Image (cartoon, rainbow, N blue to C red; front, side):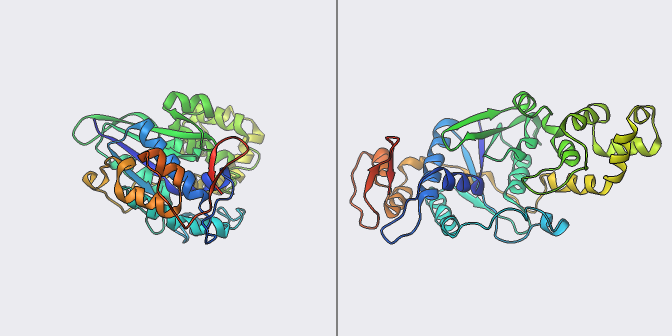
Length: 323
């Protein structure tokens, strides 16, 4: 059985950075996000048992969404220097683990993941992230080229780095109130404050869900309004007015919310095979280099001296951390 795990690198880095206290090397280099990422990587491998794995990273340049809407994510605070400096270190760690990394100019990590989730001729795809936008990709059954079926699920981090849940189609609908295939239609109508795009002013979640149930897609909704179908005539006058005034915003929000599944990338599955990461010399050497003594010892049972990190110390919650 082929199981491909696609990990959203930046989503995990951000979560690790904000979940863990400040950890630095003796030279003062922050490494708390690297440490959290390393632990998460090992947990994912141990829990999901992938045969293949890819970590997708954003690039520090504008994407097609920024070009389509100048306000896209504009309200988000500037990334801390302490976080920025750890991104390249995490990439070093992933490459030392023998795991394939991918980025694509003009596209987000979500788009890389969406493209690979569609491309992959595997039995199962599991996406690891803390970003619920990715839930739109969930499918219990997808036909692949050789006639077999695969599933696409999400291993969603729900609380820091410690708790996660696997989402199939039923879990997504229970969680969001809409099916995975309806998520983009929903966000086109209600918008997304986290990414700063508007949707249709005055259309809230309940109305949006009712419209999706009755019309299926935003495109069908507006066609019905234009053609004055019997179903469209049942809508309240105020709702119709809001929809007409918000047409351009709805179309733009639909575009921004849609994860691309045909980005200009390809991967040979052979390149994504993973081996025994926990005992890979290059990975263990990298842990030693970063000064993660407790993690190194946990994997090998061996104590290795290191001079480039501050000594480890118990935190108030009793866990071991590098301080």
